[in-house]
Image (cartoon, rainbow, N blue to C red; front, top):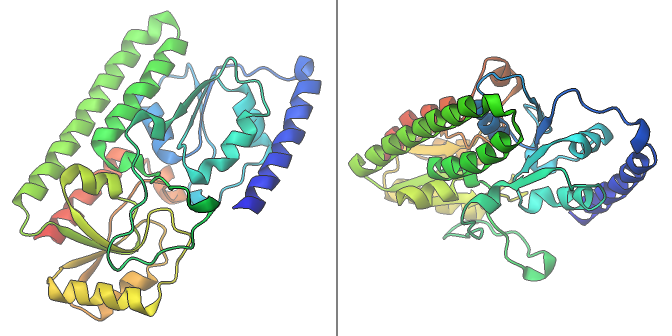
Length: 316
């Protein structure tokens, strides 16, 4: 993490110096830009815009990429410098953002941290979970996956909408407000469906054979969970004790499904399923999509709707 931070910091200083010295010659974007680091922010902004071409919407971490190991390219830093609205997650994996924002002129940029839009919670290590060595002097680490709760997604959308409407042409604000309200209504419909599934479920526990990036989702709907790693863990290989604990938990409680998140290597989840009668299923945290999913028009709403059937199978 320190090596990555230093590399990004040096790059940001170099790019910042270049931008400052060449500011008078820098090309000005034809349209105001909205720059988003991750897919959920991009998709929320896209829903608010509703097809409007008034803004140039950019996604920095490309489909199919691993969000936790992203390092910005010089062009990404230039796009941030030139944007009107910048939306990022706000957690430990975004440490690079601090160095970039500290090296450029942000006076005319609306900066939105999605974690700042909700009540962020600390990473939690539950029974059986494999812990990582403490870093940064043992300071608390906050779970970054705030959008996994549709209720949080609505709060984040509301904040993003306020910035977009404030930067938009006066004639288009009414349409943007309508898009926002329609989208939030869809999010609340999702919320209602998840609540119904949990209320009617035979059990209230889910098991993940991987990182657990659904803390906000679990808290919102009162679910218990067991997992191999915390949400932002860098680990991919679980130790024997962790795997054994999860296998025993699935057997003891007759858990019918073991989940894995998108872009997982599935190794731990597959091992658990091979040792039990549990089915292997994906629960999508929406942190990113594959290139094919992106081309096919995947959205936060469509991915979370896929989760409805998966959650119902896990709780019954």
